[in-house]
Length: 449
Image 1 (cartoon, rainbow, N blue to C red):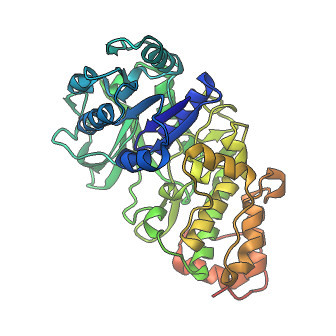
Image 2 (tube, rainbow, N blue to C red):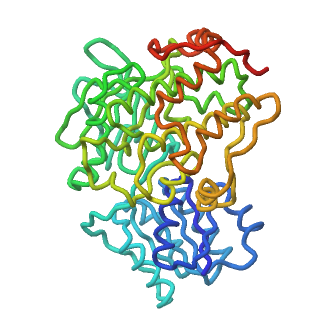
Image 3 (cartoon, helix red, strand yellow):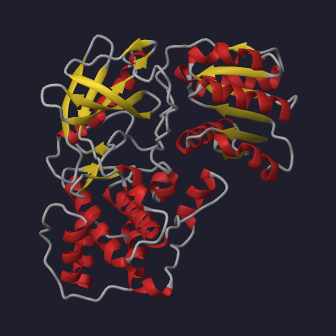
């Protein structure tokens, strides 16, 4: 069986691919972003798929894609996934073929299975599945860029009002929360407000997920970690007020190779940040360039602890067996759903470091599942000759077996300092400000050119 899966979020596609593999172990999934589906269909689909799944947060984009897909794959079942309130806009498209609309709010393994089995087996007229009270909800993790609209300061058709804060612009829109830049009225400070969608507040699992980040970060008092200023409830919303990073994230600095005299200080700062959370028993589990932020003074901090796990905080959504994180930077053990520890973050750090040095991803493939497979089986890539002195460092970070990696961020920092010494540290303080390190310095070794 062949499925064509289309959504702008890589994480969403990965999780749906996992669900499909549970239903049909032999299924082949071709996945791509919303903007790329036509090119992928032309080059990757030798035969028409048995069914197509398309999803998007914006009603107009979902309707346009669904309309084109119904024409392109006439007679093939189509499952549309979107917000419940967008269904009326998409409904005219559903009436053109064998289509089902499934609301994101009621998306679960059971509802997905029911929808696909119904449209594939019965080949009936379009149906709209009702919402249901389920706790087996899909974990939506990602950084989808929201489309600007006139109601950007509203949720569920109602204006968002958080006492003491004035919203100025929306900067993020996830599966269960929205993120805004806001001004604190008492002193005019600019900060970030993460607000839970009011429709999720009655779902204890989703509420627990949202509050998990606050509980995690509250355990750590470190300049290497985003600062949380406030947390509270209104009649319709739950919110977290946190630090704003005007200098952006690491992703914005990538795109071309970064010279070793800047790359190694970045690695050092990221290692210090990981050490600061690992010392508190926290494993980030989603270390990636967008989650590495910079303040105005260029100091570095980790953000987005929504899927992190902490030894002292046991939750049903941080247990072994559930896949969370970003496949491009995911350790082999995390990709297979096994239990992870601090060494998994070090693997992600190695993947980021390779991208910093080369402007290339460690592994690329046509599907997310193939990338996960490559992380588990393919050897670490080779650095070009000018960077050869850092190959051992990279190999130890990207070792398949956690036992072959550095066993802690502190061990990695000691290795780096022993090899590059004060040459690194001086460059580090100039390029990436942060807390002073406490690891013993070694002899300086010239950086690669």
